[in-house]
Amino acid sequence: MIAIIIASHGDFATGLLQSATMIFGKQTEIKTVTFQPNEGPDDLKTKYQLALDSFEPDAPVLFLVDLWGGSPFNVASQLAAPHLDRMAVLTGVNLPILIDAFTIRDQPLAKVVSHLETSGQRGIRHLELTSDDEEDDLL
Image (cartoon, rainbow, N blue to C red):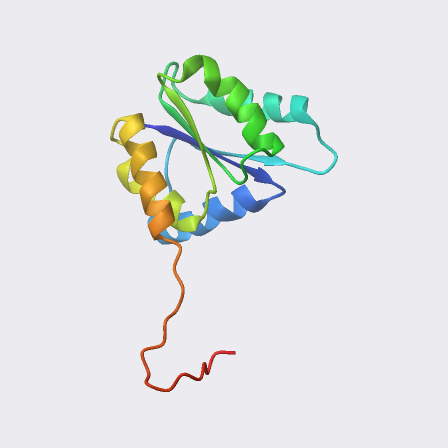
């Protein structure tokens, strides 16, 4: 089973896991890493290492991070780069992606990443009114 680290600026990752747990139930091999305003990259690296050390050795690991190019992404990428055979970093984490990851985490890592990229893009939608009336009652 793929271990998952959810990482974000601020407490977003913690909130995501709390919401996902309400919907999907408690999961094992899941950790959150939060990057706080008073912290730097070394703090993130320490937090990531603690999370990694809590997983089975050589377990496949999926980092689900909030933002491409941000510190949580950059540090996760540095840690994953030497281990791309068993680690992956995916940005743009949101609740639908996290729940989707929970449902397929028994699959091979490459397949999970590919699926989450596609499902994440499909999950972005807008409400379209089907009324003949062009006026938008929601605004």
